[in-house]
Image 1 (cartoon, chains in turn red, purple):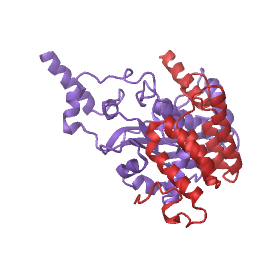
Image 2: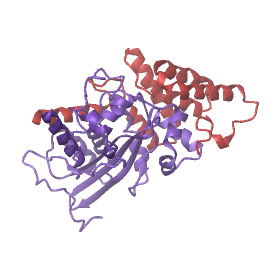
Image 3: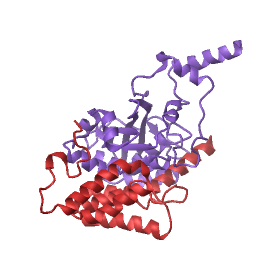
Image 4: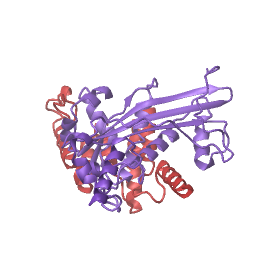
Length: 137
Length: 259
């Protein structure tokens, strides 16, 4: 009983710390980065930079990046008006996690549209920039 | 034969009386969920900042159970851009549709039931409570539900490492709820325990849970199907403060002098 409790506490502590040995992925403060982003939404550059650092750091050390992180980086770049830079990250998410195939393909298509269609009509605001949730209601 | 029958009756009786101490995960396991869409958090507390802050704590423990977790911020932003900025609207939307639009196997709905602090003299008492429902987007039913509350009262002293971490965050004038929220998630999703059995990306996948004997038969009975995604609310878990310990009563002190 005491052992189980201790084990649970350790597990929680590890998960809470985000990047401790024993987790499956190299989280590298993902939850803190999101939290900071929601606290300081105006610090957009910081958000992009933190996400980029997280992914590159994991790559350098040969550790597994968790699901979603590359896509978050891609979307942060997309929101910064850099759709061309976003595409490789959406593609990476899709490659690494086939579960994201449908969503990432939509994101890539939209990023391509936006990147190529600067002169053309702007994406319809009514369906959102990505259009991924088109006709949700 | 009679023994077997007796066993079945016992299983049925246990399932019937609603004690979910040993949760039956057969539905969740049978659904073979690979990917989980975590949608923005619904808020029943009065703290308007709580849902976004709390959302940041949910992906890590779910992914660590071995499931693909969709990028929560991307998902939230797409929904906002589509006019679903209010999580209430998202939670009210057709889950099967949500799942199919994002290509998700299942949707995780989290609701903040409580997120509050009380100040009494020199101590601060913080309570969080969350409910979690995992909905299968393909078969259209609840696969898993859990409710978790946590309370921490500063000034109890001690509490070990985790107590110290949470305590340090909470004794300030504006308490930081995050360590407590993370702990609630960790407990709700812990396995063995009430949480998710290992998903496809976890080394324990397919090995850490097997259905209880007779479960197949028991779950075949339509009367067994728990329709509502509600689990019995468990009493707030009071974080053990010290070995010497304060009495285990929930530390919600009458707020005579709360400020």
